[in-house]
Length: 262
Image (cartoon, rainbow, N blue to C red; front, side, top):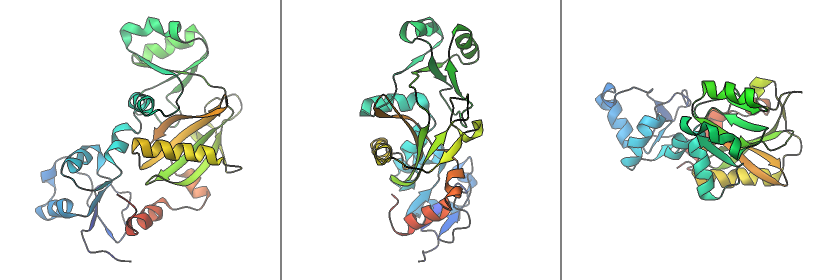
């Protein structure tokens, strides 16, 4: 299936090489694009991977974009996600944010152990800490003045669901290595595709739709008899996709050409 030149424009490079998509690259100033390129952007049926900067302007102009503005606004922003999850009634562990003047309130609200995270732009499990004692809490607060604190819910694995245009294209368990409560692959975790629970996948789909996150990896755990949405990631890694022989570029291309995106 073909497409006229300029019908689909991408600023980011994730679809570079797809013949139906004109990839222009991301430039800091709109006037850095040539007049021809500006016309392509403004007249395209859809602009893909526009970055947060251009996603805001294009949405104001009424242009179709992918991923959604909400994906850029909330994915990888834990504080914003927590507020959004609560407002939408999405099951999420009890979580509170403490700025410097309120650090002394943490132990009034939480008992050891609990989880503390870097609230913005952390990835690969590097910004997640299990706080077991005062010494660990002091070390965390010494580096992170904005404290993002969450109940620790016992579990032995988490579920990662990758969704494109709210459609689950892959789901897999992430199982932590012995002695590590973090299941991220970068922290030694392993992947399993065995007995993926339909209820967990459906919980992720519902959360993505409610939050309008259309290019996302959602992490969930099952604890205390229910599913909990932990967080949504725009940088969700491709190892699980590769293990299943899936090409994300081709998945997005297929959805684009079939008219599913946007």
